Amino acid sequence: MKTGVRRSKADIVYDTVNIAFLTLLLIIVFYPLYFVVIASFSDPSAVGTGKVILFPKGFNLNGYDLIFKYKQLWIGYRNTVLYTIGGTALSVSLTLMTAYAFSRKDMAGRGFIVMLFIIPMFIHGGLIPTYLLVRKLHMIDNPLTVIILGCVSMWNIIITRTFFQSTIPHELFEAAKIDGCGNLGYFFKVVLPLSKAIIAVLVVFSAVGQWNSFFNALIYLNDRNLIPLQLVLREILSSQTQMMQQLELGIGDQDMAQKTFLAESVKYGIIIVSSLPVLCIYPFAQKYFVKGVMIGSLKG
Image 1 (tube, rainbow, N blue to C red):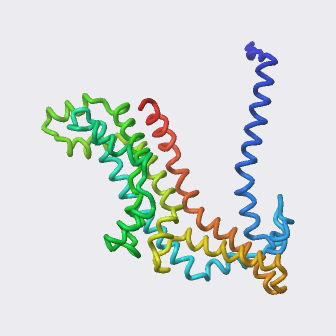
Image 2 (cartoon, rainbow, N blue to C red; image 1 turned 60 degrees about the vertical axis):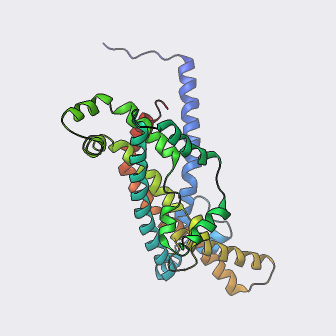
Image 3 (cartoon, rainbow, N blue to C red; image 1 turned 120 degrees about the horizontal axis):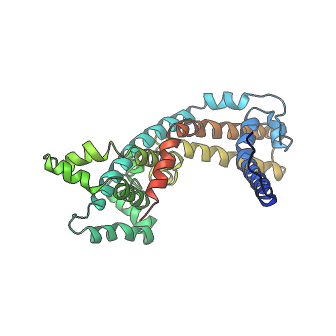
């Protein structure tokens, strides 16, 4: 007859405190997402007056109806998808190639070049010089500006370089070199097939960053047909805030109050619409994401 391991009081107390803490942390993280979902299809007046807390009040899809009819939203959605695909592809490609070069000990002047890459992490040129440079290159109102600016992150390069150094043994390159394979062939035929984990990490980092980015578009894009989804969301939130301020000052009428409450539902609906693609893609990359981050953090 098998007997289970006897647990001490300290183990029971530890497990209880640990479960309680993790449960509390889950509630803190999950509740904002839950509230956004139930608020998006609840009665706008109930949401605006703070009556929606744990359960939805009423059922109203007018917010989603306005979202799907708002042309500028879908223009922004299209632009964000294009910026995300282009920016992610460029960022991942440049990061992998740069990190591979930095991982090679036989690279001439490697230390000096790495230092040049590290300096901008701490000392940045600033917004005004960058804007003057972009304007001099005639890239104002050019969608490539949103894709190119910030496409390379030294943090990602360091993580990827560490992954190459700690995961791919140098003997593989020597064996490939004996077979007549150069650096270019070794990179594409050996390194990349063995780097699926870190590639998934870079794709998630780059895609999420580009999807949520709005500052570069705010500064360098004036054409409304080029602005991303996040700027459209920002405009809606700003207009809704202005209407709320007018109501608090007693300027608005009953019709404005109803529009303000409806704008509240639209706000939550747009948050769901804008976040849904990222939430759908992340679970498929989670396995490689965790593996890549842990391997890339073993040593610097």
